[in-house]
Image 1 (cartoon, one colour):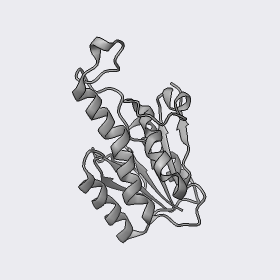
Image 2 (cartoon, one colour):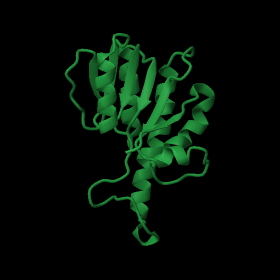
Image 3 (tube, helix red, strand yellow):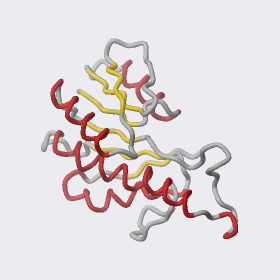
Image 4 (cartoon, one colour):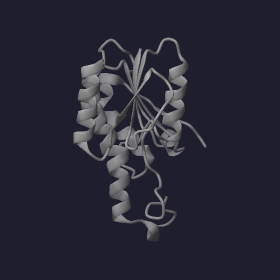
Length: 175
């Protein structure tokens, strides 16, 4: 089995790559991240991917397809906070347009573009080849919402439009 893990430099993504590398049934892992995380396994092929740039997503999908197409894609990338410029808002006064746009670009548009470029690479026989994983508690509680919510739960929005092909389910790790 070949697996692409997008968001491999984050906590969940890194743990996922390390666990997959120990499995005998996994022959190749494509570890994709913006920062280019390094791993100590011959099974792991580190690659660059920036969810805010469609050309980066397209290039990563093309490079993977030229090596050997994945059997599964796991998306663990997302953003909830980032330094002092982006923090979870606790009141209306703390909400900023720039923060909403950045969160929406990474947590909603990025996963939709990953689906656009990676789903065509996947085998049609696979039952659930795409997993979108988030550490936010809101994914589970808001999974049935159709309307956009500018936080990590937006990962379910692209799921709704790609569910005919892949039937992914949001997975929540509560912290």
